[in-house]
Image (tube, rainbow over all chains, first blue to last red; front, side):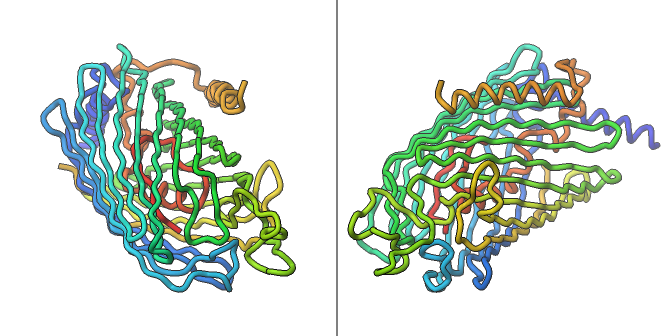
Length: 379
Length: 78
C-alpha cells in the first residue's frame, strides 16, 4: 500500500514535471488544473510612540485552463487602510490626522501556449480616492529543445493619475514603461536558476503630496538585476529558495535585497517555511536629514528659503537604511485538492542597519507586522 | 562601462560561483529526472497572492521595487 502511494506520488510529480513550463520537452502546455485561492492579509506598521498604518486586505486569485492551448488568470484585492503617517521624517508631531482610505485593484492575464513558446497579455487597474493606475503587459517565453532553458521577454506600460485629499487642485500624471529579459535554467535535477534584467523608465509626477517639503525630479529611470536559485535537498526533503536583487535608479539610490526561504516538508501533508530577507539602500540625492532651519524650524532645512533647492524630500523611504524581515509559513495539504496556509512576518528598518555605508541619522526605527491566512482549491 | 552593466557582469559571475559553490555541476536533467524540479516550492513564482502582498508592501515602504515581472501599476501608499 505504502509502495503504491509512493509510486502514485512519484508518478504525479513526474506528470507535473512534464506540464511545467521550462522544465520538460513539451514545455509550453497550458496548466492542466485550475486554481481558486482566497487570502486575507492583516498589516500594521509603527514607530516608537505612533501606530501608523493598518491595512486589512481580502483577495482572490483564479487560474483557469481554457483547453490545451490557453489559460486565463486574474486576481482582485480590496485594501481597507487606516491610520496616520509622518509628513516629514519620523516626526510624530507632524503626522497626518487619522485617515481612512480604500483601494480596489485587479488584474487579468491571458496566455497562449504553443509547442515551444508562450505569449501572454495582461491588464491591471488600481483605484484609490487620490490615486488611479492602469497598466498593460506583454510577455513571451521561448523554451529550448531539451526543455531545460526558457528565455522570457516582457514589456509593460502604466499610466497613473495622482491627486490629493489635501489639495483638490492637484491633478498630476505619470507614465511608466518597462522592459525585461530573463532566462531560467534547469541547472541539474535539483537546481533551478533564474536571471532577470529589467529597465524601467518613468516620466511625470513622482513627488509625494502628503510630504512637506517634497519636490522630486519628473523623471526616474531604474535598472534591476534579479538572480534566483532554488535547490532541492534530497536527504532533507526540503527546498532552499534564494534570491538576490540589485536596484539602481536615477535618484541615485542603490539597493540590495537578499532573501532565503527554507521549505521543509513535514510528513506528507505539512510544510514549514522559515524565511529571512535582508535589504539595504543608499539615500536619494535630494533627501535631507532631519536638521531644520534655526529660524523657521521644521520641516525646512537650513537655507531653504534663502537658497531653495531644486529637489528635496524628507521621506523616510528615500533615506539610507537597512531592513530585516523574518517570517514563518505553515502550509497544510488538507486533501489532494484543498490546501491552507498561515504566514506571519515581522519587518524592521533602521538607519544604523544600512550595509556598505552610513545610514541616515535622526530617524526612528520603523516596524511592521504582516499576517496572511489563505485557502486554495485545485479543480 | 556603466555601473549597471558592471553589475550585470558581476551578477553572471555570482551566478556561476553560486552554482560551483553549491557543488552542483552544470548537469541539465533528462526528462525523467525532473520530478524534484516540478515541485510547487521549486517554481520561481511561488504563491501568487503571497507574492502580490509582500511585493506591494515592500514597494510602498522601500524605494526599490520590481524585477520579478512586468505589468504592475503604482499606488498612492503611505
